[in-house]
Image (tube, rainbow, N blue to C red; front, side, top):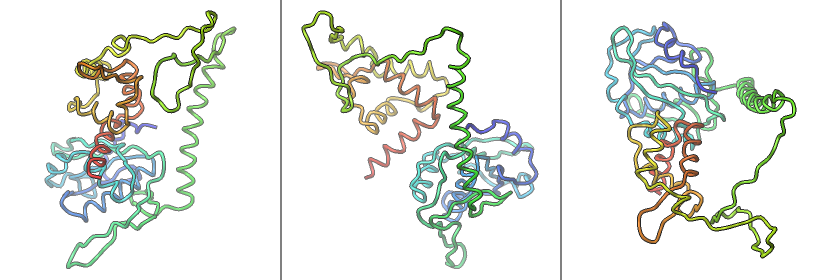
Amino acid sequence: MALDPSLVEKALRATRESRQIEFKSEFDPSQKYHWCEIIKDIMAIANSGGGVILFGLDNNGRPCGSDISTLLQLDPAQITDKMHSYTNVDYNEFELRQETKDGEPVACLILEQSPVPILPVRPGTYEKEHGKPESAFAKGVFYYRHGAKSEPGTTYDLEKVINRNVREIRREWMGGVRKIVTAPKGSILTVHPKNVRVTAEANAQPIRITKDSGAPEFRLVDPDKTHPYRMIELISILRKDLGFLPKKFNSYDIKALMKVYNLSDHIQFTYKPQFGSRKYSPEFAAWIKDNVMRDRYFLRATRTKLRRMSRT
C-alpha cells in the first residue's frame, strides 16, 4: 500500500513526533553513529507501515539551522547499500527530497512500508565518546514504532504486520473476484495461451513439428519485425510512456537490466543480429514498464544490484 501523500504536509506542520513522523536535528553521512541511529529508525518506520523522517528540525518540529546540504546530495543507492550492510535487505522503497518549513530548507526522507519485517543481521555498534562502544540496535531484533520511539517490537507488533499484509493480499484478490462477479450477464471467462515463438528459456513449452495440415500453424517470424527497437528507440518509448522516469535514465539502465536479470539470451526480449547493434522487442519494453509501475524504485534497485555484482 502506497504511503498517503498528505503525510508529508502533515509532518511539516507537526510540532511533535509520532509513530509515522520523526525529527532529526542533523545528519552527517561521515559519522557511523548517525548512520546506525537512522538505520534503526528506517527499520522501525518501514516495519510499522511507513512514515517520514525530517532532518533539520528540533524536537518541537522547529527549524534548527543545521546544514543538510550533504544529506541532500547523497545518492539514494548509498542509503540502500548502508541498509543492506546491516540487514542484507535491498530496501529502496523511499524518496529523499528537499522541503521547506518556515522558510528554512528541510530534508525529507519518505519511507514506504516494507512488505516483510526488516531485521538487522549484525549489531549497529559505534564509538561515540572517548572510544566507549555503544549500540543503536541489536542483531536479530525486530524494531517497531511505539509512539515517537523506535524500539524492539513485541509479538503483538509482529501480529499487526502480518495482519496488514494479509489485508492487502485479500484486497487484491477480492478486486479480481469483484470484476468477475460484476461482469455483465452472459460474459464468458476465457484463458488465452501465450503466443508461440522461438525462445531459449529453460521453462518454455516444447512443441512438435508435424506435416498434418490440420494442426495449428507454426512459423518463424522475421526478428527485425518482432524486435523493431534499437537502444535509443527503446529509451525514447519508455520515456514517453513513463513520464516519471529519473533524469539519469539512459543506456546504462538497459545494460544493467540485461546483466542483472541475465536477459542477453532471452530471445523474446532481445535479438543480436549478425551485423548491426542489438535490438529489442515491444515485450521487453512492456516488461520494463510493468516492473516500474509496480515498483517505482525498480531501476534504482537494479543499478544497486549491478554495482554489488561488479564488486563481488
